Image (cartoon, helix red, strand yellow):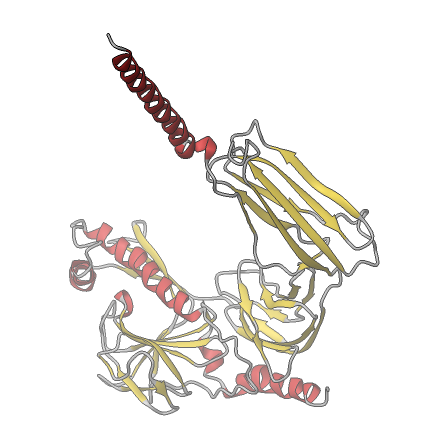
Length: 464
């Protein structure tokens, strides 16, 4: 073999080795580039937009990474002292997410500090960046606020009856005021800004289901500081009627079956008593849930006044069923109770297909078919007060319409779970059904609504 051939073969062999080495290196680099432990995404520090910090409210932080977290550190600088608030090594935990709470360190922050700088550093377990991993840092300022809001009840209804309503007007001040509301234990009533900055108003309701009632106004600031005052209502109990109703085959095979056959959730039920139970209870609950959800809303806009006249939706009407009636349905004899429900409105009847008028202006929030309530308009009268009109034969208004006092909105009928032509009239305060009799009484409205506003206005209007 000549020297030339040997040189050529050596060159080919060297080139092959070089290409092989490049392929191996490319494979290694490709593996490194795509392997999870060489990922390049920086970890994430997430938190709500928080400006204030107090002893009352820890600050929640979420630490996360698409691979795994390695460690974090939280540093505080109050301008005088700088220290590590918390740190943790997470190498053995295999966590992708970690929730931490920054509790205010009262003994370490200067009492004169008004603002602190918080720095959070977070590292993941990636071997990227020369085995140092990916790191992120977040720095933000927090205002120190330990002062509770000031809170004062300006005026309120002097008494409340079980199932009834009341009015409360308060003054709440704080540089970082977050919310003002009325807490009755199992329900929060939102308060609407009223007349001037720092003043708030709300209707409140005592559910007829509850034997005991207590209401307290709560003012909460953005730092979590809270002040609360009990509303000095004089409470009056009210007994509601209990009725036993015999469920006849004609009733079940008529109205009950008609409602069931038009609802895919119940059309398959053939057993009479089961059908009665699901329509009177399950369907009723679903229909009332819609009503509650629609009537829970209250505007956040400030109002300067609110006037309401007594409701009188049906001329020359007779009361055929009362509010709060506890109804027990039995089949053949009272020992065989098959269903139970509450009547949360006032049934009024006059002539067939009588005109229904709204007594106060408002905005239509619902005008359609609603199960046991049949064709049902619903009107928002402001300040969380809503009216519903059930079993209508026709609907003369649409959602979004603005109605005036005296407008004819529908006609009575027997749609839904109604055996005769009548109106089911209901009133709600922020999702709670209330006694209709109060809102149909001019004297009650004057004492519990108008006079409360007058007293509050007299105080507010002379205050700078």
